[in-house]
Structures are given as C-alpha cells and as structure tokens.
Image 1 (tube, one colour):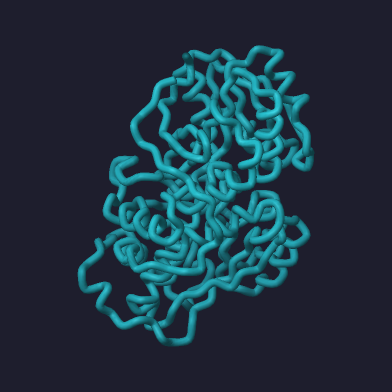
Image 2: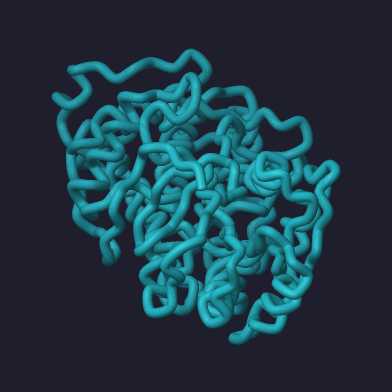
Length: 401
C-alpha cells in the first residue's frame, strides 16, 4: 500500500448540543455572495442575537438504524450556528433548528414532509430513501438536502448541499485505473441508492469492468454476495450501500476476511457509523471515499482559515476532527445562512432559488450550484482514506501491492 502522512484518531462520540466560539471565522464567512467578504476582527464584537428566533425545519434520521446521519450532521452545524448567533444572528434574530425525527423510516420521513409542507425552507439530513419519501409533500418548499445521490434536476426546488454522486463514484474508477485493476467488484443495494451509484460508476468507468452483486437494503447477511465476488477474483470490492445496508456489507466482509480491499461510500466514513460497526469492524483493508475535505489545504482555493477554525471547533466540542457528515452539516448550515442573508427572509421560493444559482458561497470552500442540469453544490471533490482501528489515514489512489 502507498500512504500519505495525514492521520487523525476517532473517538466514540455522542450528539452535541454544546457549542464553541472557535468557529467565528467560519460563521462570518457564511453570509457572503458572489462578491464574498472575508472575516473581520469586528465580527465577534457584535451583540448577541436576542430577537424572535428564525426557525429552520429539519427532517433527519435522529433515532433508529441510521441515526448517525442526522445526529452527526447537526453536530457539524453547531459551530457556525453558535458563532452566527453570538455575532448578532440575522438582523438581530438568532437562527435555530426545529427537528422532525424520521426514526430512520420511510413512513416517518413522509410524515415529516407533510408536517413542513407549508414551510418556505427545509433542511434534509436523512439517507436517500427517506429524503425521497419526504419530497412529495415539499413541492412548494425550498429543500436543502445534505445527502449525497439525490441529484435533483435543475427544475426541482430541491438543492443538494453535498458532493454530487458522480464525483464520489468517479473515485472508484480512478482507484481501479491507478491500481491497474481491469475489474472491480461491487455490492449494490437493489434500491435508489444502489441504482444511482451503479449509474454514475458506469458513466465514469471507462475500460474498467464491473462485477456487480445486488443485495436487499434490508438484508442482514451479505456473505453470499461477498463470496461470489471473491470467487471471481476481483482485486477490490466497493460497497454501494449506506447506513444499515452498508453495515451488513462490512459485517459480511469481516466474517469472511478476504484478502481484497473493501471501499465504502462517503457517508459510511462517519464516526457514528464506525461506532455502530465497532464490534465487527475489520482491522485492515477497509477504505472510504469521504467525499469532503477533512483538513485545511485539501483543494486549491479552499478557505484554509475557515476550515482551520471549523476543525478547531469540532475538536473542542467533540474531541475529533470532522468526518464527511460533520462537513456536510457545516455546508448545509453555511448555505442556509448565506441564503437568508443574501435573498432575504421574506423572499419567495423562486427568488431564493435564483439567488442560489447566481451566487458563490464562501463556506469551508467557495461553492456554488453551477451544474447545468442539476441543483448540486459544486467544487467539493472527493478524497480517499483508509480506516483502521477506528482511525482515518489518507491513502493514495493506488491500492495495488
């Protein structure tokens, strides 16, 4: 294996309600548009927000099998929310979240969608199946989804505040080519998540062949699928599954202990997910595509000061560096703050959509919704990390020995 030098330990964490002031740089960067401004020393001297709160509805998986999605993303929002409210909020009004728990179920997500149907702006912090279950009730709402693979069309009122699925799954192709693999094995769920990922991998794969084994998203034993891929002598297995479905793939891989690397999709790089699989997490050869930058300087043009402040805040409050879901939550709240400041609280949904399309948001990186066909946040390329003993270390794209 070939490795780069970065690494960071992971500790078991609980959901954070406490907040820290270390992210002042991050929050003051959130509210800018195309002519973005950088943080100034005077920002932190403003009076704390004391007016009537601005409440943002949030649909999330906060309990149940996929609770690590919602709880982790909310934790990632806290530093920016705290810094914003300490600096005066928006027009003197603090910003707060109103959570609706899907209980990690499609039916619960649909109920949350109905609950917030008349809200002008809603955040979504759920796995893809639950996000899609909530959407039918939110046709007249601006919906910001911190969830990969939704890939909403340009005509939709939903915006994906997370890396596009195509960019994350393109790494599978990059790894295969760099490692000189002619074939990669894939365990995919036979639902919207698996179908989306296979679609993107197929579009990106070039000369790489795909050996795909489909499994049920509710299956608890995926050993047959892993065995078939191992018997086919694939040099790498990619898990196109999320949450509990991803956990079933990792468990089967750990039981069989094949001498082939397993690569997880981005959301399964979260500390909450790793905590959930800690009893059967493989000791080696487990990799992840985190999908978001985890350290300052990951990509050209990144706001290093903002990312440094964010990392410091997360480390102070949680005791670990940000994972992919922490960062997705941070992007979601950054875009929300920028939108409310830039388009105005009382603007129409159409006006908010237009503002998002024309503006660049100075967040952890400068981001925009510039895809000609999709409402998907741009300029968030994926990375590639190894997981070992509940710790990350950044790996090169070459998995060949």
